[in-house]
Structures are given as C-alpha cells and as structure tokens.
Length: 557
RNA sequence: UGGGGGAUCGUCUAGUGGUAGGACAGCGGACUCUGACUCCGCCAGCCUAGGUUCGAAUCCUAGUCCCCCAGCCA
Image (tube, rainbow, N blue to C red):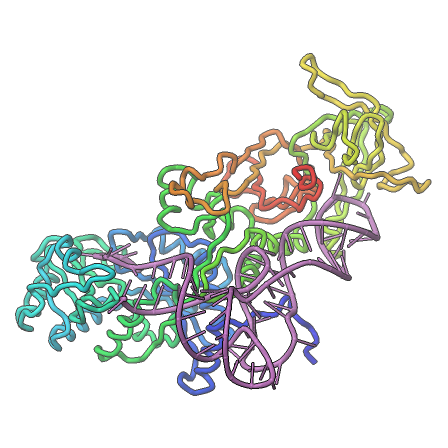
C-alpha cells in the first residue's frame, strides 16, 4: 500500500546498519544517542549533520537523543554559547525533551572515578611542566619516556590529587595522568592527562572546582552514565577510541557505550572550523555569529534558510567514513526547492529605472490581480497597483542589446508581469549620458498580460508602480570566501571574498512585499528568495539565495 | 618496519560474489505571463597490478595516493 515515495530514499548509512545489527543481535534493546557540543562557539552547518544524524537516527529507531554540553574547559566556554546552541538545535527541528545534560553534572562522579584509578595504581600525579611532558612524550616514530613521578605511591598520589582539588597548586603545576603505556604507537595512550589545574570560573559550577577533567576522561564516562548506546563522533576521534574503552574497562561504569566515527562535513567556499569562525567574529570580518554570510545556524536562520532545507541537505549528502567536500550547489538545491514551493511571490525592483507610460490616461492608477504563489493554489492572489509612472530593473533594459537579450530595448515590446505589454519609445539621458528614464507606451488591450490578437513577447519583466512603491534596503550575499578551498594556500583570511556583501539602499517594493514579516520567506519575482531582517531597525531584506539564472550564466560563459 | 583510517561518475553517495544505481553539477530539448519552476533525454565512475572464481567494486596478495594523531583543546 505504500506507494508514496519520498523525494529521495533515505540513504542507508553505516551507522544505521550498525544499529540495526545491534538491535537484531540484542546487543542493545533500544537506541540512545547524544549530541555533545562544547559551548565555546556557535553551531554551524557541520554540526547540523551531526545533529540530524544523532537525533534523526534515534528518532528512526524509536530511541532518544540527549543534548549534552561538553563543558570541561571553563577557559573557553560561555553561557551565551549554551543558550545559542539550545536555540539552534530547536530551530533545526529537534527536541531533547527532558534529556538536557552537562558533563559538569558529572564532575563529582568523575572525580571519584579518578581516585578509583589512583587507588588501582592506574593513575598518578605528575609534576612535570607542559614542556617537559611534551619532550618526554616522544614523537610519532619514537616512544616516549616514563615520567620520574610515574611510580609515586598510591597514598602520595591520592594526597596530591586531593590537594590539587583543594586549590593548593597554581595552574599547570601538577596534573593527573593515566598510567598506560609511554611506548604506545597510539599517542593517546602515552599516559594521557585526566585532570588539569584550572583556576577559572565555570559557567555552571562557578568556583566549585579548580581542577577539570579532560575531554577523554569525561566523554565516555558521561556516555556511560547516561546509558548512551551509540556514541557517534567525527573521524579525528578515531584513535581516542582505545582510550575511551580503556576507561570503560577500568572503571565501574553503569553501562557500556560504543563509539563510532563518521566523516565531518566540508562544504565548498565555506569554512567550518570553529577557530576560524570565532576569529571572523572577533576580528570584525563579519558583523557577528549571526551575520547572514556565516555558515552558522544563527547566520543561516537570519539569511532565511528554512531548517527543513538543511535537514534535506544533510539527508542527501549521506554519512560515510571518507573525507569529502560537498559542492555548494548540493546545499543550495534543497533551499530553492523548498522555497519555490512555499515562498509568496512579490515584486521588488532592486536598481530602479523610471518608466513613464506616455499614453496612460491622466494621473490615475488602477488595480490588477497578481498570483501569490503559482506553486500553491491555496496562497491566493493580491491586487497590485499600476499607473503612469513605474520602476523596472535597470538590468532589464539595454540600449544596444545583443541578440540573446530578450528584455526591454528601444522600440521593443515586453510584458510587465500581470499588467500590460509596453513598448519602449524613447530613452531619456542625463547630462552625463546616463539613462535616467524610459518613455514607453502601453497597449490597453493587453490588460492582465495577454494580447487578444495572440501576439507574443519574448520577455516578462517585474515592476513596481511609483505611486505606492516602498523604499527599502536589500542586502545581496555572495560566498564569504572567494574560492572553493579557502585556506588551501595558507592564509585563510586572504581568501575572504571582498564582495561577499552588497547593500542596495534604493530598492522599490510593492506594498505587499514591504509588509512581509521578519523571517518569512518571499520570492522577489525573477530575482530570488529574500526575507526581512529582524535585526534591522528600518525596512531591510536579506537575500537568502538567487533564482537560477541561465541567462546570466550563459553571458558569463 | 610509529599508530589509526580512507579511496566508486566533475561532486556527494548506494552497492556486502550475479546487469554499477541515485542526487547535485554539466549538456541538449519541451513547456512557460518569473531566462524561474516542471518535464524528457544525454554525458559520466569502481586508485593500480596481479590472483581466486563460471562470475569480483565486493574475497586474497602487493603497491600507490589521501586524511588524522606528538594540547594540561574538544
């Protein structure tokens, strides 16, 4: 009976395969995943992949997904980021219900487990400083050497560790390390750090602690505490897995999660490194984390990208273990696809060129009917004003057009959408030779846009009546970076696209366009999808994405 | 002779011994009151070399190339 097929079949991916097999073999009885962001920046489209994977997969198997903040480094984390992350995950369309957690919720337990390792002779307090530690760690091809403090008696380790917690030592003075194997080929096993001294205020625990667990010592145990069955992370954590398991093996944890790794998202013309994104904000290359050019979820939201389009994008790119870079066209496609179906059509002229209809009677105007969305009959129609004075797009007129140019030119007839056929009779120029006005005539018989005699016209133009045009600002965006592989030559900031933002301040909108609510997507006919900017005091629109433009592409050739 | 991963159309991704499929991009056409949308068609791939097999993207052997790891970041 299921004859209806989705746009594209949800691709199988290896995570799903593993879960299916685990369910069948009864290794697990249910699925529990987690999305574990560190609150040290805003979420970006790369995180969207992880969010969709974790929340989506849990949903698919009737399980649950926890939102867990990995807040083990108070020197980098802030409440602002925690709040923003919650907002963004919700906006993307996911709900963690009551399962909101923080690694810091487990600090006491983690501390107890650290003592447990010390008592078992599997962890020790090291007095080496960072430089010495690095020097003794060895290299990729040479084994490390044991620290002289490695064989401290248990009692001394315990005493020192407790004094670390008590705040007796300054930052970096001592550190708790696991006692594993300084000769391991896997660097993560060369006595990794478990706890470091950090006299810093934590967004959640305040001044309660001055020692903080490392990622490695916190992550797997947090998973175990929450009963996570499938702990999905990115590829670079692959060789942390033996350490992840070492902790689970050596600690009395309540459950046995497993870690799986997938390839993070890379997108052409885009940077998805938190470090770089943070720098873009701090150095003022963008207006903030929610600058519409940013690949952050906050930026995309402000840009007008529908969350459903992001989910669809993520679904289409799949999940694998091979590093790859997705073509931006792949990202843009579902945005247009979705917006085409849902966005109301409006007319807006970005670069106005005045048109006077010489044979239009008197100074009056009239109302015409325009369809709100040809893709959606339920969207209805609206009335638009027509009059003697109008604005059309400067780009839609050429005084000396090449043959492929179908739009307005001297002596040529075109259609004004939903209105009349007009013919350009005269070109008015200013002293500098700039075209400032077009004198045209209209054919009253073509009211509504069709000629009773059946004659055709090669172009239909959008336009706005001067009588009730509303002036607005419109921002056009291009890729933030000017090349598909920003930073490939070294300095990533040198690859910033100097024309990523173009602000047009003298745009003319039909009243219905100006009445759009902030965030609501509209299509400015023949131009693209836009949405009113919620943050701007005046009337301003952000271009989400342009319409495909085969004419412009052919011209660029 | 460090450890760990990965290679399938231009890009992303299916395939798990039985006709290499989809999406995006590109190209061509149809339609069109958005040079949009939609529709139709085309182009195009198993890293290399051996081997096993009736049959190999898939199994074996040997290579090649790419990515990650030497934070008291995550």
